[in-house]
Length: 407
View (cartoon, rainbow, N blue to C red):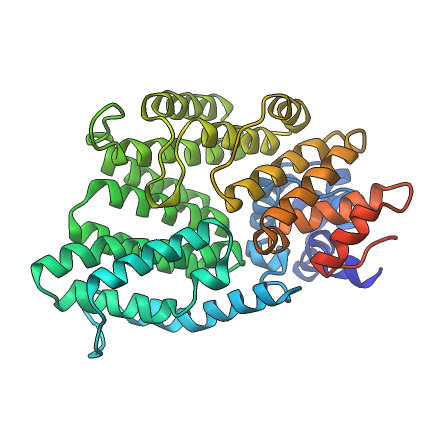
């Protein structure tokens, strides 16, 4: 077994299974797959093309998703190294500071901090995580100070800005493989939204918190948190009104619910949630509260991701390639092209040229996001293993990702 094989998701699964003293038959049954399929995964003969599969296997093995993915990864470039340093800076702050216990430190003008939070979130949306996280600890601290001790007017400005700053911390932590910090960040964000009394912001904060729990593999908790987020906005959602923020949040909760129920095999429920999201998107048009990009384009992108999770990737990827959508940011574009690559890769080698093309595009659009995604890394190794000859694009991708391969 080579160095990269020893670092693969399948090899980690095999090591954990053996340390637990579990048989292939038992673990495969718990994960809902065949013994033969699990054996192929462990030996690196099949790839982990679905997040739901990783979550199911982690649950069957009694370990965390991170135990299987090996995140966070060693940085392959300076941008990733700088972004990982952000997580080390903000981790103690996110756990220490609350709206009821803030440090006695000076804070800059609240309007300046609010503009800073918005700019940081825009950087995060473009997958520029090092820029988004620059001095993020100071931003979070000073917004907490204004939100807890400022004048009523200052609090009205500080609280929504604090929600947005927490979304930034959540986004960086989630993408770089620290879902626990992502959950804790949105605990702080949800507390700020609730104190403000803004249902739309509470809906978005709850949505992000549910997404973080999902990335942890805690599906039951994610579903409960998501149901609470939906309840916060359902009565307020008016997709044709003057303020459509609650409708945007409601639409995003339906998209995440479609993803979660699809991973559980509840395909009817998944279709219902997708239809609800599509109806709302047609009414709201393209919107972008807190950089969530709710609208018809994002519904189409999520529909592709959900189809890939269900194993229907090739046909859906082909349809979307024939009628492409224009993502609104580098982060969203990178995710879309990764999902197109994953979709084509499900054709078991018949569409690998398209998969390589889209994976290369995803990495060039949003390198820090893609290189730290376990599905992208596993997909790269799968495509390399299946290649019958040396492919320049695969060589380049391996060099950029910092991984070795068969060739």
